[in-house]
Image (tube, rainbow, N blue to C red; front, side, top):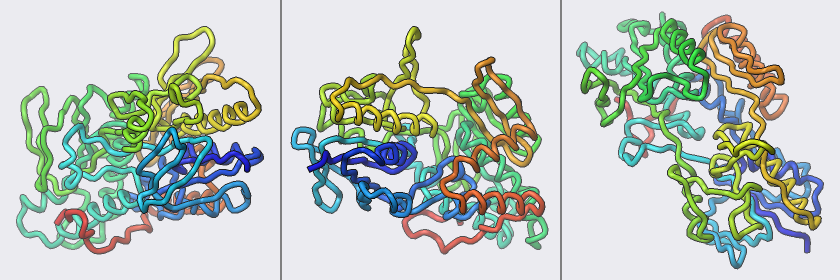
Length: 436
């Protein structure tokens, strides 16, 4: 029998690992708890009604239809036996493996206050995007019917917690929706009177960017109409709004639509791995891996992507942490596959080296910031040309020609008309509180 390779998760890392093993003499099983691969950098576009879900997602089975050494399974891994080399699915089924690549990704972190999740959904899955879109649009609908000025003001106040790329992108787009998409569609309210607040606990937004670009991003957000509150720590969230503490003291922000973009935690599968192998976890629950991305004492197990607490090993330099971004996950996926092939060939594995190509973040229409690493040194710019660069870079990395074409067409239409065609919501989700 050929070696059995089990890949848990089909995000950026899992997909790249499976594709890199296309011509290897192995049998691969890819198991994921959803049936689709998701292009997460554009997930906020689904949450803000700019794109429909199929534009940024692709069925996993379709992606591997021509790769004959891949079997795709829909399921959730809940248990691992490192000695017997088996994985247990939620329905009780067992999967045997000779080599394991874990790419289970990350989830939201509420810093020990998971009760806030009901009132402030995060953005990691399509279901999260649908829920945020529903809450935003239904808030406007409820405001149209509301006679009490205070309650109407709370319905038209949107708060994004977290000033990273996701938070900045959401806040900027919420402001565009209020000022350009919805005006003229309501009779009792003026959507342009809506307030959009971005709450960030640190002194600046986009902490991973150079300080000058962070300041430029804040200025562009302000120009769009977003109120940026820096140095504001969230102390409580409920159905009526949130409490924050700033240098001026505690404040109460009344809002019926709060979105969480402040924290990331590793997949719960990290704890399963720690229980099965005794591996160490960092403070975020990520698995501490060896330089070659394997687990200490378990060379047949590799952990990649957001679940891995990995370092980049460049000869002559101190190891540096690998950021939790899609290029890092892709590179780790390809590296894990290459090391697996080396193992099968009886060769020694190689340490992982991350190549940092820079950071991008869009603020809104014609506004973005770009920080690129080039052989000649860093290249940093912002504004309209940065926005164009961001746009074409994201279209380039989308999966499939159809998705690239559809996204370009939708963005072109939205640019000239300010329309957002995906403004369709279902009834209130019985599993979560509605904003009204």
